[in-house]
Image (cartoon, rainbow, N blue to C red):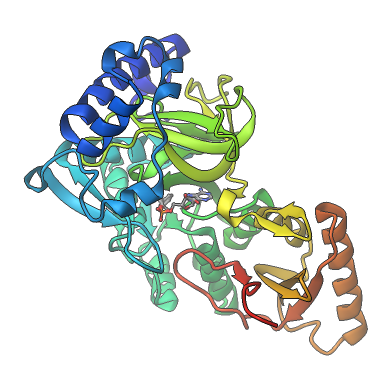
Length: 438
Ligand code: DLL
């Protein structure tokens, strides 16, 4: 299903022509409206006339999170506050947040972009969809909210938390769709199982996003929400406050990569170290230029998210480029005894063991200048608690499996079911204590 079929299925050449025209316009807009960009572009010798092909984008300097922070709160805005109708901020835990602003036109485009990806996932006006993202400065809840309303779905803005009430409403309203982080969805599923109401649930569509989720983890969540009368199906959705929020890209029903809304977002993949643009299809850091945003336009924004992009057509009929699941953030990549490890690699091993829940935490310590990785995982239930031999075998098997995937050994600790903290938002997987003196 399409929300704007003519754009979503535009021939590639046409998409690229549109991107070029918009890029030229954007460069002019930035020079005229954002002194920060005017100086950067002038120092780099870039003018709209010099953008003759999409490749010329490579002459534009990158923009980083630090650039936004340094101009806190509104320094990179492309419009005066009287034209800004909404502010959001990124989910940083320390220091000042990165603030983003939207004009009326930006909000309209935002809800179109979200409407496209939720329809690609299968949402329709017949759905009743519960939004269990935190409403507030975070872009996730309001972003999905307006996009789903545009499609005509019945939106239930429950926000995150109060899980028992979420489950009660889910049964009473016969909710068919759930918007949340995968880790919160897992928590809701656990409580449904515990309270024995699984058969009363009508969920068939999960619109997940805002944090990574391996296919294995997703499959397990799908299984926990499915019952004798409903099969639950979940898609992955990507976005970022600095770029807009959700709506940058999302899975269609074939789930072979998240379709990028390329008429609004121009994507490149670069090598994070050399900063060179990589050939098409390579894995690297995603860099996005927002082609139409007025509130806070972004020129070549370094997302730090690692992915790869395919430009082949998709079975669904969309011609837009597709990005693979985020492998991790370049700043979340753990370097352990010289080996690079992404938490997603660890997750893909853990989800193959049915005796443990996909709740885990990676604790890093340093003893006598050697890094140690402890993988803490929760047992799936209480059935193994007193069975020490079986627990030992399980631990050894997880350790072996992690070693063969990661090529380093790590400590595995099994902890009691539900002993790890649950959050309504993004799960905190990494606890890095390496800077603490030992
Ligand atoms: O998380 C926007 C969003 C909301 C996307 C709801 C999808 C659904 P931020 O809080 O600014 O914005 O966090 C952005 O979250 O750089 C990624 O590292 C991570 N992220 C977002 N979506 C995904 C995803 C929102 N599907 C940061 N898979 C990004 C993996 C994701 N990581």
